[in-house]
Image (cartoon, rainbow, N blue to C red):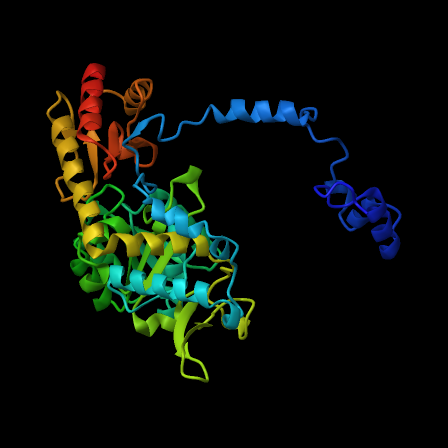
Length: 449
């Protein structure tokens, strides 16, 4: 009997297992690994600490992190500080939800299946598409998976991706494509948006999909219908990586010609949380239904005619016809999707529109105030939602450090990802920012110039 329940195996347990396997010691478990690649020295780690010392050490490390209670953030660039109503945590913290996994047995999983069905319905309505799957890992992998769907559907192996798609999204796409013999070509820009003439030249009969962001990484709002028309004339699909909060006000991508819509769902009731876990959203037109990775929950009736829900169209590697699977996604961000479902249900169309409008108008207020400072200028003239790019008269990193010392997280240094935008900063304003906070950062920046 193991007296220490937190220790999985006692010495006696290990001896019994080795005796059963017929090996003298645990070293024998690694006998198949060539000696030439085995490390024969101790790991270079510090001495083990007592529980008390370790707790204090971790507390010291944690103080190196700054959270939103300590700084006023104007940083977005893909992860956004939005208000999460208390009802979201109240629902997702219920044990029947946060302990749920894949609902393979519908007879005992109706609650989770219905919640997922409602999530799919809301996502389809928000994006203007016919169907949605039951979530992906995150926004970048959802975009990459959508690119592969384009290739499978069109039987072509070239993707065009706009240069103003989030750099991390493009990096993940390149990683996916390299393992699938898919060519990825960047679409040049005109100002802050995609150059339609360049897209027309690049988009020929070899292109499977055109991948753009809405609003794009610079915050500018693309003319999706024009891009969709160009893609469709060449027989390609249009994939749009959308910002869900913006869709409370902007036209749904499905209404502007998109074939597949993906998104990072973090902004829908999920905290920034040190970068994850997040929620990948994917929705599409109905003729792409059988191409979607992940799973789809469907509504049906049981033998007594009662409404019920089941998993359907599971194009996954551990199911039947595995050789035809379109993805190796084998986990589902179900709890994050549930948070998004509760958030959308609680806010409703009117609430989501109000949040979106607050984002836009507050961003306009800050942008106009900052551009009134000497040497500060707006870079792109195109319409934007809640992110905008400014050129500063001093090095961005220097300004950011000085403002951080005053308690402000001052945006993303675009020179890190776009050398031609050296000296430019991407700023974000969400509904949580107050006029007083925006006025304060304007005064702080004025003191740095």
